[in-house]
Length: 160
Image (cartoon, rainbow, N blue to C red; front, side, top):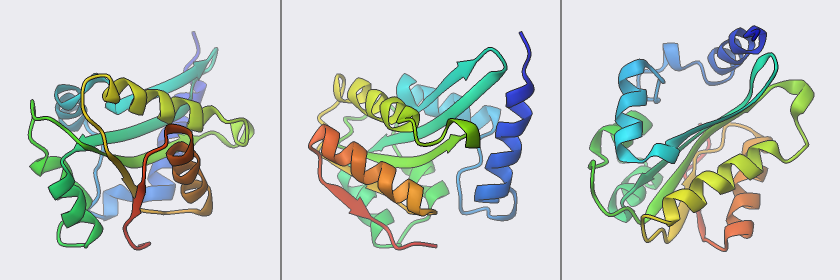
């Protein structure tokens, strides 16, 4: 199987979020992936075609207290991850990021993958809120669509 899309997705993530230049954001490393999997297996999801990944999403279940601190800009994204207790009961989900290759956009793939991940987390935790930090108009539309589909209130941190 070819992995042509993998390099394109990595470049898209680096270009869009610039996590290498911002230590306050979550940078998805092997260590971070391991931590996310301990928090919940549905934190990272992808959809693939024959050439590799075409959609990546990252959602982070956490506590309402940490959600409030993040939305109020008292903690940053990296601190949100670091302070999320492993093995706790989570009642909020941070809609962290969604990346879709350009030729696959507008087909509902990110919405379906994100809603599915949140539903999986809801099967294990009493999720009451969603929250997000908009980086793009598309990200804002995605967050609002997932919120409507799941019937969960959505909180917003100011745009960067």
